[in-house]
Image 1 (cartoon, one colour):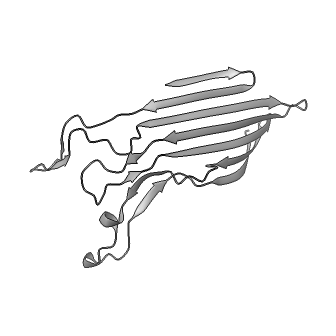
Image 2: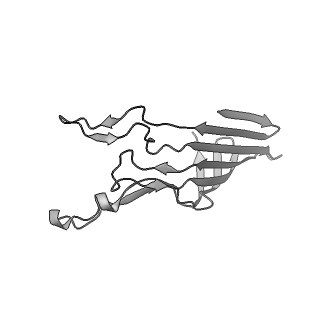
Image 3: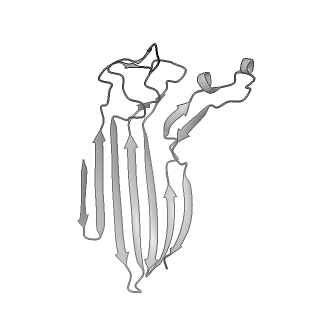
Length: 166
């Protein structure tokens, strides 16, 4: 669902998604002797049940001809799972998270100067992982490192960008 509109110099949008995706039947490995991988009803990995985003943009023009666009966006998602099967070496549950970004862009003709802060609250926002029990060290195989890693949202980032089109 997406709603959007304009009120004077303010543009707004609100989006919401509900996702209740589950397997409609048992899932087997594609081997010559199939093995049950996940049971009917298992929730699909990486699929939050609820997602919402809200965006606001306020644009103002000064007498000098310079404009400024101030933006804020908010994103939130509910918990997710990492894996569809039933092997605890791969499976993990990740908490839902919320991210807020803000920016101000000053512009005139074809020049844009932006000041921004992404992920203001510095939310970790984990969306997936290779877990240590399955991807960690295996000295018996001669592997002493770790392929353990997480996939997460961009940490708090503060910056300035200057763009000019030709």
